[in-house]
Image (cartoon, rainbow, N blue to C red; front, side, top):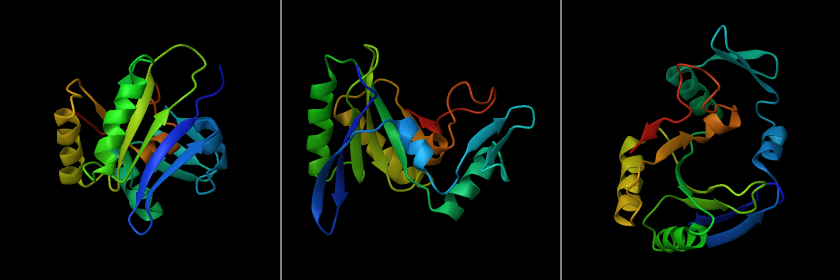
Length: 176
């Protein structure tokens, strides 16, 4: 199978809903991220080094400051599902998005290298706006997604923060 691709539905309030297909992997997106360039983790010092020059403390406070300064404040609820359920999950989430009940964008992974779970991402505009984040989580629960979900700020993704990045720093901000 090919690298993961994404299908996204985005609410552009001026022009309505837009559907797009992204044919590149998340890793390729990282490479093209002009703002931060290369990203490395200094595990001993618990820092993230951007472009070989800028050091950020691997803490919520440090990452929140970088997010605000860079304008990268979006985040997403991650809804994992098996390949046999992905079409149904996408239909439910996309219908709710079109009705204006969720965040401003959703996307779903398509092709996978191995037969594993897909992920549907439900975006909010500001990962610090806890009221809106919990409103979207409540709606996802009403739609039937009652299992534990994780909310990940986009800046975490862009800085390659995953479960094995830092032993005492979570790869997500909220769960519910």
